[in-house]
Length: 233
Image (tube, rainbow, N blue to C red; front, side, top):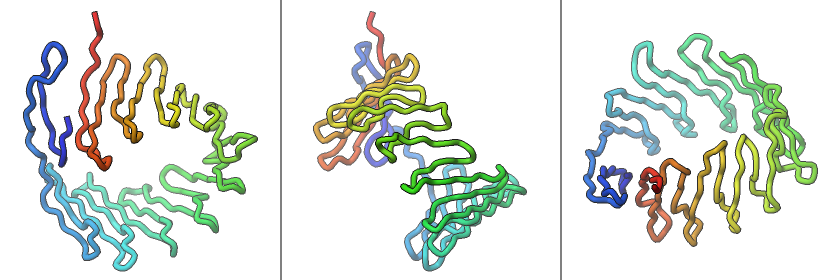
């Protein structure tokens, strides 16, 4: 169970399923944080001793490089930007892994190329993506902003309020307040419960785990925990 301030609690249960005892677990440590003058993170050392170093543009504060670890297993990336902050290049020390990006006049990604080859993207006059590397996106005739199909294999349906009812291999139901009430994927249904402020209280997977969420008076998450669903006999 996750407790406030990132603490974890281990707990035991009675045969009835109620909590019998709880014990705080040791807090994992991540020492060695340093920061740039802007306040952006500069370096930190993870619990396994691996150091991450990040550099930023001196005036725009855009991320310029990321270095994680050393040797041949390291992550070593360098970023390049255009005048408005779009990433136009992502350098990678690994051979053939550097990437480049191209945008249209309104900053929409239209082409990317790198170790994966070349990817192209097109858009309709409303700004909806029409194609992505050959995959076609279709929109509802009466609502040009409502996605209706993806690549001909995913057909999406909606209720009268615009909530998703079917698609991506699942079916979905919504509450009168347009919150997700349940989703069914194959033979598994997940149900969701909310409080009067529309914050999620509970997530229950049939035959699986039940998650609970406790919030403070201002909606901040104070605690989350889960238990396994019990089958009545």
